[in-house]
Length: 139
Image (cartoon, rainbow, N blue to C red):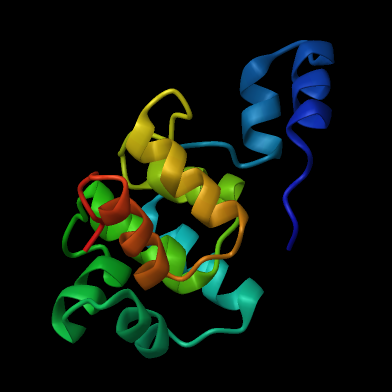
């Protein structure tokens, strides 16, 4: 299921007499990492095991992230974002769901990651670009 546009939701919220009713109608709350990961798997028709493998994560650790039994560092979330083939907006939502800071274009390392996400680079190619620029790699 596609999410409504943020601008549309914002206007509806501003027009609403009560923010609680708006939040309940749209089931707005903090999005959990496992829930959003499952939503992405469903939307993209991917299997968890394949995504964990593409992300270069240990099977057990990857499973625990997907089940909400373990948290994930910002880099691990980025590994999953590349393995899922996410857009920049989806990757930022995934970072937010994990409680990590979003990508920031004024940060040199983040700018490289943003560029790579936008151009559909693989995780490996992104790490090569980060290394080439003297930045810490994701993996």
